[in-house]
Image (cartoon, rainbow over all chains, first blue to last red; front, side):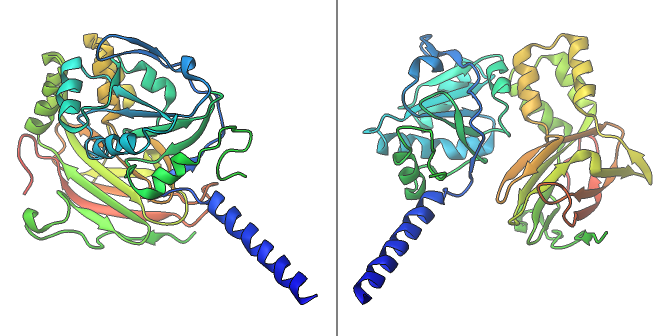
Length: 180
Length: 182
């Protein structure tokens, strides 16, 4: 009888711990309502076209930024480090520069994040369609093209809490991380 | 309804180099609010460097910019609602130059979309439900003949705005044209 109680207690504790871990989001990451991602069809610095809709099937890290924005400048190196650490995953990192010229974008990224290829939202209209809360802004788009999370302001994406969170995004999003 | 009056708390009075921020600030358990007066030269240089045409720079130069930085340091939602802020200068109410004002200005000179977008993202949003730890920043803009202004800012709290509001007051924010603030 005592063993049954002990095992039941242990199972309860295990369940509690797993649930708590799943509910925890890294600081500044907010769960959102799963609205469909707006269209995102732009060209990159080399002029190659890109359509977010063509990348369905895995998670996308969609990040809006501008080089004049102080928090954006501070955050970008952490995204570069994050990209390296998550290179073995299917997470797609999509950087969207808001309303700057090719020269401005190249001059900034070549110095701080040379491995990242940005898309150019030259007139800023794609950014406005996504309605970020400000710049920088990051959205996590699930494999079915729905926005599941938004980051508030700049974040230290290379830190373990964010890396672990991004590594453990579920393959299926019927029950996104934190809602399980 | 009880209102927390936080004006004057921790307002910097030391020399600029000794301050943690570049302008007057109020910091407490709920909020950090920093207001940084800008000179005409600073703003013209910023927007010129981003390719704004002379007609836009001229209009920007006729106004007074104050850069705001706000952080929600509480564990609840705090609302930035600029309609809840009162600005005065020389004892008289002062209106900020809002998005409608700038849209009309840009329409007049047919400013290209990229510059409109950049300008918009450099402005403090009119409404924002600041989540715990969320920062927000941007410019407040006033008529160019403003010299010194006071700010009484009320922040509703709670998801439904029904919590105890937080108020912060700033006095004598410099808006002197073309001069760097002391």
